[in-house]
Image 1 (cartoon, helix red, strand yellow):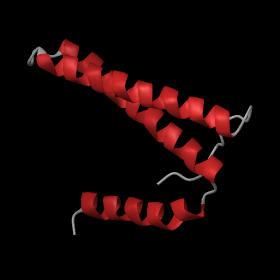
Image 2: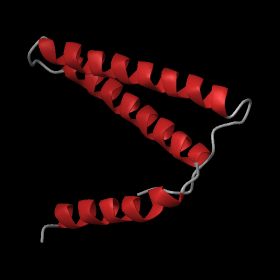
Image 3: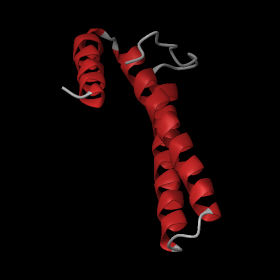
Image 4: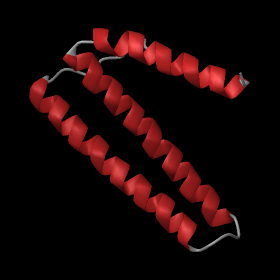
Length: 96
């Protein structure tokens, strides 16, 4: 079994064990946190792709993905504020 496969398998197993035990506030907080991380990755890829001499379309694609995911984060934060009125995001200790 490859090292990558083993690592991914471990992450999936940990998610399947932990996520069902989180309460709604923890689940939404976790989802927001992962979406923010995704936004950051797409923005870094966008910045890096502008520096490379690749297709002109690549930075546009990464920027579009960045914007779409940023919108998702904003919607999730809005939902969180409505449901959990005034509470700060739950800081989960769960890190797969």
